[in-house]
Length: 259
Image (cartoon, rainbow, N blue to C red):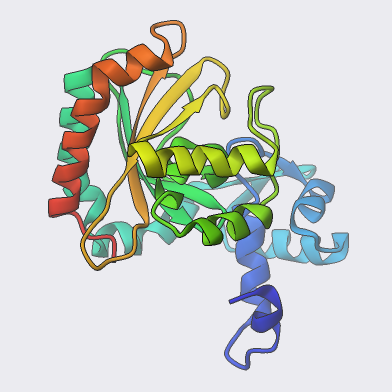
């Protein structure tokens, strides 16, 4: 449903939507935000942003020092219903642990949510990456290996439409920002079965991912491996670990439901 469709829906509560958007403005790159920053990120007026921030603070979901706001541990309660009622993260964790132990790299499972990828399970190998990435992290779909892998299961016309409507913002100097190149990255995965991200999200970090395809179900998830760039080239990374990643993909496809 588009924003315009939501605005005209009799069953849509706009104030709840606004409050949730304020909460979602806080993430790794915006851990602490001022009132003006929240207004800019959400597109709300300062007066509206202030009321929402103070409401969330009163309810205990935000802390403040009077100038800046940040999320409190209470926000974890919002994720609890999913974690308690949906088995995907728990079922996937042993597979990711085995993959991380076998490759000695960091393994992640992510779902496509609108323009972003949500990490729902993760395991770090002995050579731990210090990326700050964890369960609940959001990554841009257009330049992450997981996002590209999921999009590769879409029809080419749908991919082009999706990416054309996506802001191709630079996360690093190496981020692909032109539409033809972004489309080509997805097409590459469609042809070869794996997607890559070579220092486009964080300098010094490379990753590869494969989509988790289940018969007669939409493809919404992918599994990835990440490595420090100084340890091996992308080609060497694929040669060393793609087979293990594909085996993990098959195990996840056979055991994990993403309904």
